Length: 198
Ligand SMILES: N[C@@H](CCC(=O)N[C@@H](CS)C(=O)NCC(=O)O)C(=O)O
Picture (spheres, rainbow, N blue to C red):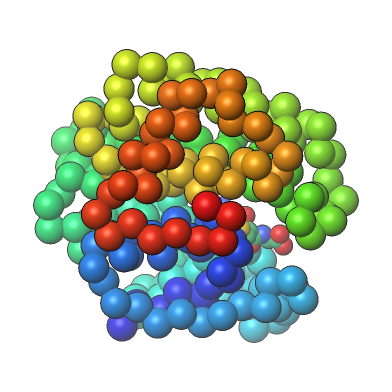
């Protein structure tokens, strides 16, 4: 069975819980004591030298990074082939937003860590970075319902959590109405599950 090293309040782990639920895949959760930095101990650094979660084991395979895990799960378990289509252009289109979800959108994650766990990071810079990417997402969603391909893909899953959690990082999403509508569309997906703060 798939094993997810998980922290309930992590938006990155939530990406994986959400997609596994959408796929209808059962999995085992290994709770990580993130607040007390269990993910930085020797055991966890052996699992992921970057000292981050999520981590997934599936049989002999171990993966780190939520976006890599989403790609793997889509390729292995999505029988529809729609969440990460095979053709070159579609794969490229989706992957550019996977990079955004694991990259620029993480400014919002950082702002939230400052606000809720007192991380000593530059809140102004993180909020500015998050607002910049939310503006770009808002423009992208001006004439489409989903980030790419006219239907939900793992691009939407990768960008969703820390966009929807922006308020917890002190960022108001009201200047981004297309983003707000997209959030509601994601929440209406079959088998959607939530997490605290969303
Ligand atoms: N590139 C990783 C980053 C994941 C990430 O930042 N995870 C956070 C929890 S949401 C973490 O483990 N941070 C380490 C820390 O703050 O000590 C991914 O996208 O999965």
